[in-house]
Image (cartoon, rainbow, N blue to C red; front, side):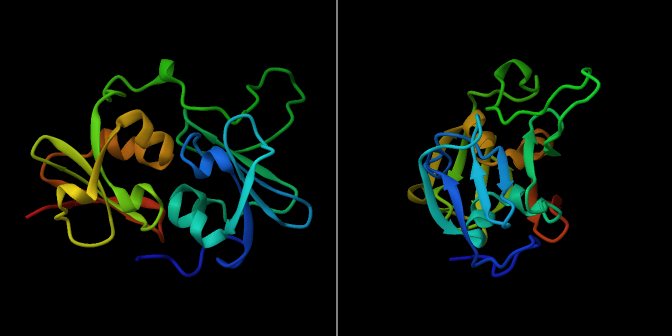
Length: 204
C-alpha cells in the first residue's frame, strides 16, 4: 500500500481529523475544509457541517483527496471552499460591497459541465484508489478508454478495475477535471505531490 508519511499542511499526518460521513462514503464530494480556533480540521461536503462525522487521520485524508494538500496556508479559524469554476480552493469571505458572488460549498453543477467531457462516459478506475487504500497517481488514455490508477505498474487485471461515470470520478477527485480534459491517447498524466499538478509523459 502506498501512503504519504507527511503533508504540506500545518499539522502532522497523524493528526486526528473529522470527515463528513457522506464524503467518506463517496456520496458527496469534499468541497469544504474548516479549522476551528484550536486548529482542529473538518472535511465536509456540500452544505457545510454535518451531524454525522468519522474520525480519521490527516494523512489518510490527503491520500484519498490529493486536492487537500494545497491548503498549506489554511490557518486556525479559517475555512476554504472548492470552486468548480476555478478548479481550486477559494477562501471563505464576507462580501461588504454586495457585488461579489459569495463562495459556497456545493456539489458539481451539471449545467456548467465542460462541453468536451461527457459526464456519463465510463472511466476505468482502480478499486483500491477509489476506496482510498492507495493514492491516485496516474491517468492513462489507451485503447480508446481512460484509466485512473494508483502508484505502480500500468498494467492491471480486470478484477482490479471498476467502471465509474466521468461525473462521479470528478466528484471523487475534483483536481482531475482539467487533467481529464487534456489527457491524450498514448500519454500518461502523473500527479506530482510536491508541485501539486499533473505531468505528462509519453507511454512506450
